[in-house]
Length: 293
Image 1 (cartoon, rainbow, N blue to C red):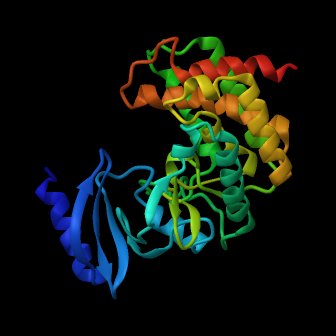
Image 2 (image 1 turned 120 degrees about the horizontal axis):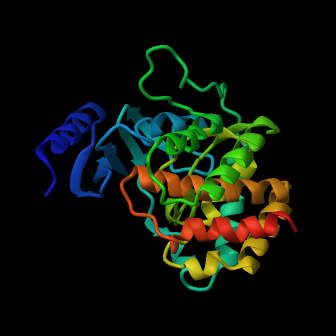
């Protein structure tokens, strides 16, 4: 059952934005109302708590529909989007032995995203009094390593934390042409629309070089760790991205290692128990063995 406080927010924005709501559903982090505005199918999405997606509407607006679902209206914690139909998730390809095709689609979306240059990339995370940055940088996200070091947690092997932090900071300092990225572009955040093709949804928004964007792809699909933990899969995917997007293969590989460690850190921060079998840690170990090749 959807809590009344979230239904109230849905009703408020529906009135403000002229949406006729037909149905609602919810996930752990959001409530979605499906309906119409001016006879166009739309989705009104309410984010339950401030976090990564609180300002997703502003990020979507910056990309103006290039590689993304279109945004019609937005406010902190709420966004009105075009409804994608049938909305088939890209993960369906990855789970049905079509990973090479799925990788090509992700590369095409990355090309569209990287070709758009919003007017400003400044991070607001250091603005005095700011409580939540709109466009954080990868340097901002690097603080996760230090937070973990300062905690009493010992679930993640120290040698991985040390190596991950060192490499992450080195990559931050040597970036070329950083721009606004999706921040979590992977199989679950890409849907198919019969009119516009494959489109990204749910951006976190982070400023960094395009090679950073590959990290989430290499950790997915989550249901198929045996696929993404395969060295041959990692190499094939990176070759596809490097060829299509003219990326630096070695930097993308290094980012993927450091991000895999950081992903495990974020899981700890979210309250999950991390064991040696954790897919992100296993991926970090596999890629660490490749970095010296």
